[in-house]
Length: 86
Figure 1 (cartoon, rainbow, N blue to C red):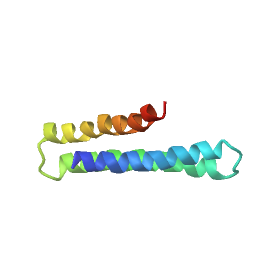
Figure 2: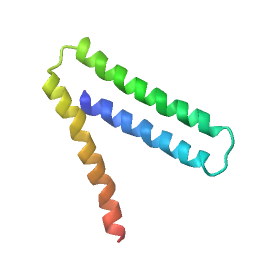
Figure 3: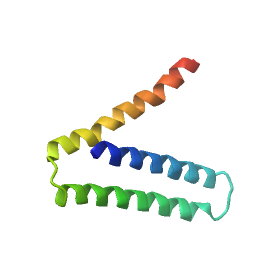
C-alpha cells in the first residue's frame, strides 16, 4: 500500500515539476496552476498516509518500508538510462 501511494505521488510530482519548468519558459498563467498542483499533491500525499495509518489496519513499520522502498527503485531506474547514454 505504501509503495502504491509513493508511485502515485512520484508520478504526480513529475507532472507538476514539468508544469513548473514550462511556466518558467515564458508560458503565461501556468505558474499559479503549477504551484497549486504541487500544493494539492503534497496535501493528497499526507492525507493518504494519515488515512492508511489511522483507518486501515496496517502494520506501521511494514507500511513505512513500502513507502520508502519505491524511492531507491525510482532513482535506480532513472540512473540506468542516464548511465547507458554516457
